Length: 154
Image 1: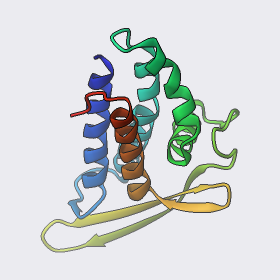
Image 2: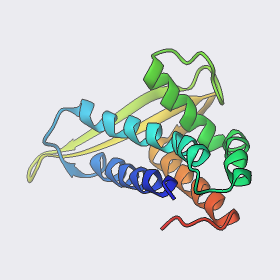
Image 3: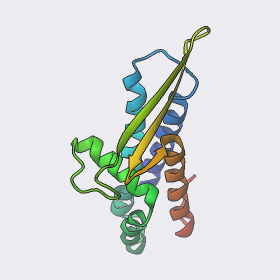
């Protein structure tokens, strides 16, 4: 069950991304917060490769994961963010060639801190997605796959 190692890594990156950019003491460059965003989406999308290559899983499950990912709007956007960040240019989009991190909204509360709150918006195929909501939906989508195939994910 090597896929579980990657799934738990995805969960840690999810938690780190969710907490790093929301009401946190601002003690590092803002680029670090965006790095957490990219790290989550890269690891989340590549969970499919861990499943495909995990010999402890049945061949049937390993064969189904690619179709499952391709049918998920959230995981396709995840794939576009992942591949766009890895290769600079998104030449084989899963969802849309225009998928990108769009606007970024920063707020800073001075006083005990300072405290930073960052919201990122992903733009894809003319739609806008809040990254925190999208990241959580990606986790939920993977959980659905594991439940459907009676796989351990906790």
